[in-house]
Length: 306
Length: 295
Image (cartoon, rainbow over all chains, first blue to last red; front, side, top):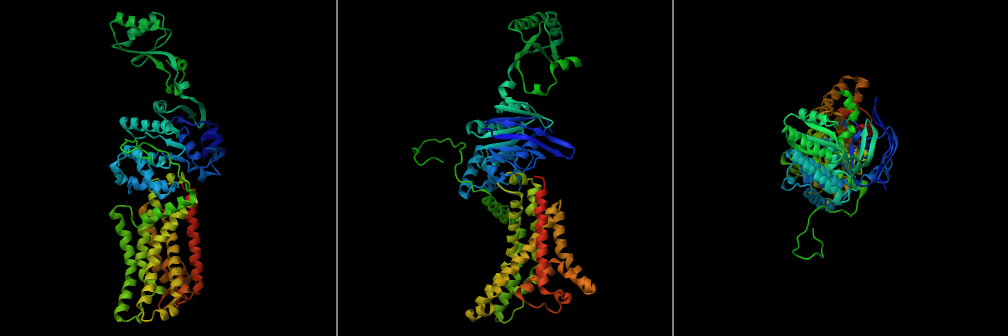
């Protein structure tokens, strides 16, 4: 069964079309919702939660109709918004317990789950202090906790690493991955950072301009490609010239040289060329096609532009 | 927490656990929001400085009742200056202060902190949210408008020499106090929230609510005095005059000769009708606001 199914979902804000006839089916698991800023990620999530009515089209989440079965459905979903949403004048414990009760948990269960969830997201003694004094990282954890406290079947995370430093980002992504993979909660994580999606998700939905661009397993998107990345100490131009002289198609990308990978012989050529020129070889790696490539102009277009 | 049958002394991974217990749905959500808001209205569960204003102002509302009971105890219960029917006349300032101080926070903190999206993404409808919050504030305000009336009614009864006789003569005061206290809380509460919900900032909300109560008061007095046939209807639109009139109608009491209600000379029941109209309009404004607000 699919956790999300939409049919012809459209949302306009005045003249702006945020979602344009979007029809998708999302299976259970950890799904990345990828798109540039303004692609319609947040709009889609907000429609699926019933926070925003669609202009036209319909959507089912966990088998419930979003428009007509909202309150029942929303007992089983969690939502971590992109924006700040925490009151400053209460403690995390007080707030999360309240949110658990609003989710329909009885008082005892709400308190117990609050303690467990805050521990799960890594908030300890500070949970008794007012939220106003928290760092961004702690606030993000509380936001995640409020989305998890009622043990949802489906979790919507809208840019969960927003505003975090690299260490906080790693921790948050690790938390998301564990939540999805170890606890069997389906997750839809919106992000414009493709690296994050690659690290956490099993599958990807790519939207652009409110339309579905591509959808599929993450492995299909990041299959190893035939591109070899070479980085050398010193001037890469000489090496590029040498390799071109040897009949290879070489492309320059800043300090890197990119060349098509056509068997192990290419590696030997690069090594030998470096040795001949006396250049230190810093990096020689076969690049996996990154999700970034989805949003890059095709290589031909790049060539044409140069 | 370890299961009951787990061996003692083991080390447990206190990781994430699933929840299989009951999910009580919409009604529990409304109740939870009601309770949380009611506690918040008095600063319970917040830091100490958040408790001071609501609790002190609420205490002010009880002072006239305590004075009356004290005076009656010292001088004999014959002397009745402050009674349930005219109590609003003595508690206007605390009621206005409470509304102006607390009403802006009821919706304001959710709008300011953008918590609405968390509520609306749970098992609540927008209407449920508005109803729960409004009911909580009206309940909080009823502590000030109804509490002292009940204290007076019960206190007078206990202080009388002849309790059965007192009850036989005055039993009506109990349901009348209940009705008057709730009408005042409902109209003043919903009106304050309707104003506060539409103010973009907390300060504007406070000023707006205070103006609704206090600016209209002298204005209505002047209009009734000099406005002739048309001006006397102003007594319907100053909330304190309106609610004082409604209390008079509920207790079946004639207004004092000096009072604006006597000078306006409008039929007593019209105050109740106008109170209902104010309540309806305020409730519609609140509901409409939260149907439309972006979460």
